Image 1 (cartoon, rainbow, N blue to C red):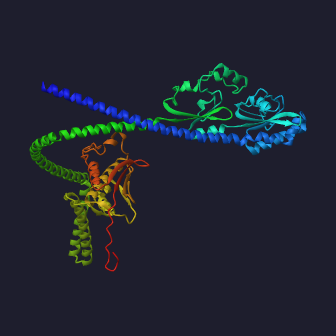
Image 2: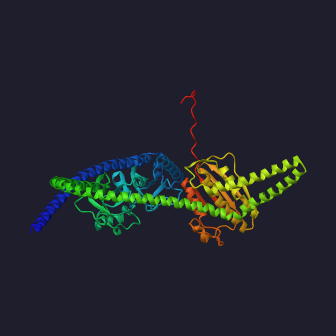
Image 3: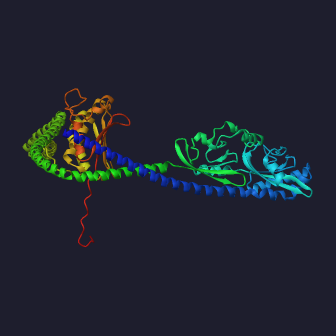
Length: 606
């Protein structure tokens, strides 16, 4: 019974905590969203104010133009002398020049019947001259009241614009109308470039200018037939079926009675301002997604704060229990730590023993590789030593004969030759003994690579001479010192040279070339042989221990593997690549040795 009561109590506490967290999250979200919504509303109003001033200034910039043109003598002469060719030509030229200076889209003059007598585009495709625009409201309004304003799609050019008209009066009454067509597309282009969702709708609620092309020629609300009739009669949006276009509010899912609308997948706050005297409405919308995101973040923070507060209370309550539990666990942990310490000590000892055995095994493998290299050269080394021995025997015999004849000069000459042969054998034996006997080369040091290469070449020279192969050493002087060990590097180059000798002999060639090049990152030594190259089938296995392509049993397959391991100990690398003209290029890269600091003399400043 007791566990069930505890379980019920825990379940009730969890529900209370959950309810508190949810209430805190919802409350925080609501407060934050309301505040952010007000801020977005202020931003919409600011944008509307700015855009309204822009629209009004754009209209006012050309509002004076028809009146000024109507006062010009060339226009009044044209209207008074209808059909006069000189008057038409003069008026056309005047309108064309005014258009160029003012920046208006088009300028033209209508007679009292609405027919165009002169226009700024009189000599251009789509000229207004000869067309009758008496059906346009701007014309009828100008005749009736003296001025007219109208936005529509041009029936001649198909290009929308804002038409500003002024009646021209003569001595006996009205004689015609002057019209200026203003292109408001740059205004929409500026809205689009700024990423604004702003638009202008006419008095019937049809959007005719917007930074969003998808809003153009769409009504804000479904239009009644009483509004569609005048639109068709006036040919306000000539060529556009307004009735077929989906209303903007219906398409976006606008909630009636609210300024919040949904455009696609985003929610916007919409605001509008009237534009007098045309009865237009200026519209601007700002996304509410940042406000919703900020409110969501604050709601999450409110939930987290509530959760942390409840957690702190629970933590304070359970702290004493946890302290007591920790004391018990500490005692148990100390016991386990002692046991584990003993196990770790045993493991450390085993690991030290394994590392020592591994190090010993590695040294034995390196030494075995040395002996294997010497074994591959054994016949050539025996030949290299036997030749001086035979020559030494012959030289000593000749010296004995010269001694019998008491030819002191000849005896000395023969003994000198014998000593030279002995020194040659001693040098060969010394190199072989130094190469094969030492196992612990010591720590890395600064090594001159030229001396290492010369020593390696001298050791493999018998093998090369025995097979008729020439080893060319072409390295610049001086070369910087590298970080490594002379004996280890000598073993690497001996292995590589023996492989190059075998490959060159197999290909029937006679030349191996060794080059070296230094750069700021290290020293690169290349051994190039003209052999048959490395088959693609074995390229990935070249550095595997005990892998060899030789079938005679003369190789253990350790040379390349151990050579790369020795180079990696010094921070170097070994790679085998096909040569430019065939064969194989073995490339050894070694790091440069640190340059020792120059000692400071007593008289020099430190």
